[in-house]
Length: 141
Image (cartoon, rainbow, N blue to C red; front, top):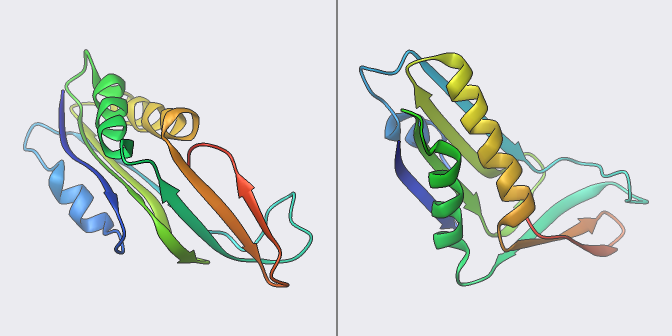
């Protein structure tokens, strides 16, 4: 297992960069996940226009640990980033690329990374609705 990228970023994320970071001649599969800002939320009374992400100073080492633990005991190679700052609808908040010799392992590790991010990463988001209403959401992306 290898983690080639685990980053908290305040700039736009690139899926191509993440896929390139896990590229290997031994990889028979590459699984990706793109978490994007959507225009709605079940708890919102109005359209969602943005999410504002903030992170604890220890978020990047936690992200590295999440990726390492998800890939432990496998041949998977992981690249993962979480964006912070104000993101508009359609922008990527989380990118994950996982390469492995076999598809099942790539899918499994990718899913474990995003589930652990949602559960454990010290990143918070404030949801902004079209009418100006805001609401803080829990830990994770």
